[in-house]
Image 1: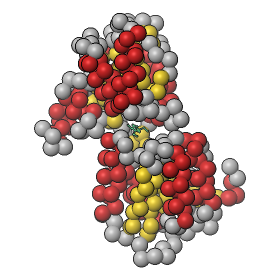
Image 2: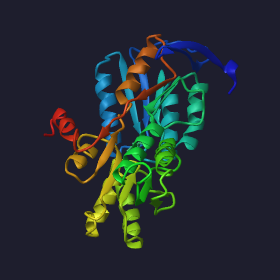
Image 3: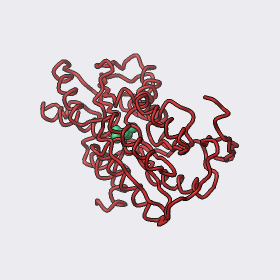
Image 4: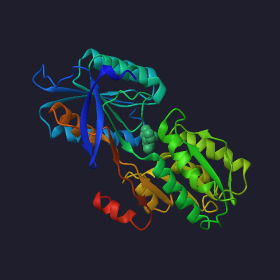
Amino acid sequence: MKRREFLRMSATAAGAAMTIYLPVGWRPVRAAAKWRVGFSQCTTLEPWRVQFNKEIQAEAKQHPEIDLIITDGQDKTEKQVADCENLIVQQVNVLLISPKESAGLTGVVEKAIDAKIPVIVLDRNVDTKRITEFIGGDNLAIGRAAGEHAVKLLGGPGKAKGNVVEIWGGMGTQPAHDRHDGFHALTDKEPGIKYLLNNQSGDWKQDQAYNIMTTALRNNENINLVYGHNDPMAYGAYLAAKDAGREKDIKFFIGIDGLPDEGATWVYKGLLTATFLYATPGAEGLRQAVKLLNGQKIPPVITLPTMLITKDNAPEILRKNGLL
Ligand code: FRU
């Protein structure tokens, strides 16, 4: 990274002095009646993404001075790159992006920054430090929490025993790697835990996880715990087990996301054992863009909190969301 390309701006987050990067010479200058904020969403094929868009749109309604333009990458890197190029041509004042994958979207993010558009990256990262801010959950911490919970379910530290099926999210994304690494930081300490699959990716999709699980069931008589890198995949695995008449033999299904009408509901119904909240960065992303446009300081990173969802607190979550 060429330091001189950037204007250093001091920001304070959690009491610590930090530095954020803005394209050199960038000033929040409003050319049109409204600020134009572009949001490149990678897909709307997954429920979490749909919720994400709803939350960013709801937040945008609170800011009449903002014109929010949302694009849908349709789960294809090339389409998302083209979307971003379009938003650059439209000269958005800030670009928000939630990338399909890191490597393929890095170039166009840099192109936006070269065009003096500050970029705020949401949920999945890109491979450049030149962005102004990153907002997302701590996937390593979530993976660790999932690993800790799995060890507990399988008999406790030092005694845990069981055969584990792990279904990866997209291989080209940091969240999948972090969710894997965090989990294994805990479960690899247990000699009694065996892994049945070798890094198999369901690309975050329920149907792909269903197919992976169907094969795993065919090849393994004894499966004790399934860890899906998101709830749709954990649920897809559950459905495969159910269709094979084995859902009762497999004691534990763990997922991540915790959407009220999805993961939390499946936990409430006893189909999943646990999930971990992975809040969407939609509302916060827009609020940060507004702050930046108002000349306020924003931190380089905002980490969204998580929480374990089990049968104990699932009813409360459903109730709060009018689902019970
Ligand atoms: C949606 C999703 C979520 C997951 C996140 C990880 O596209 O797969 O289910 O938590 O992306 O980036």
